[in-house]
Amino acid sequence: MKKIVAVGYIRVSTEEQKSNFSLDFQRETITDYCLENKIELLDIYEEAGSGTSLNERPDFTKMLHQVLTSSTITHVIVVQDDRFARDHVDAVSIVKKMGQSDKHLIMIADNLNTEDPNQLQIFQMKSIISESHRSRILFNTNFGM
Figure 1 (cartoon, rainbow, N blue to C red):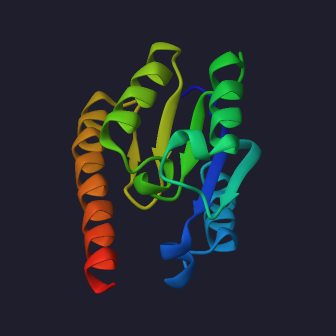
Figure 2 (tube, one colour; figure 1 turned 120 degrees about the horizontal axis):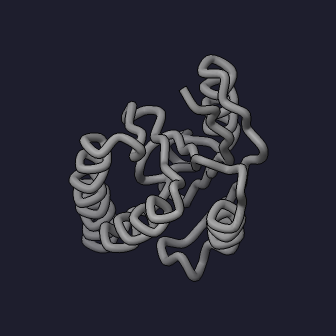
């Protein structure tokens, strides 16, 4: 079994802050997961109040650049898929680019690792659901106003 060397990525937006999906919770979950699975965790990138667009997430961009240019990092770890990206096209495109560089995404709550082709397909389907969930939140928020 090859050694996994990873960085974590955590983020919250206003919605998650209200539902207590805190940065501390995500950081602790990723750290514990790495300890339990003997994964070397190099760093955790974080964004508070992040936007949906990747252009509004500078730490995500910095993290992705580090991963893609590193000769040692093999994985990015998130608590669940919507912490990575809620836009289906972005999520699939980024994971595809990572895969072409032999880099992969682990989603703890979803128990998925895109290194496995079957789990990659599940991730691709789940990203559609995450985008749909975000659209419902926006609709409900705007409709409530």
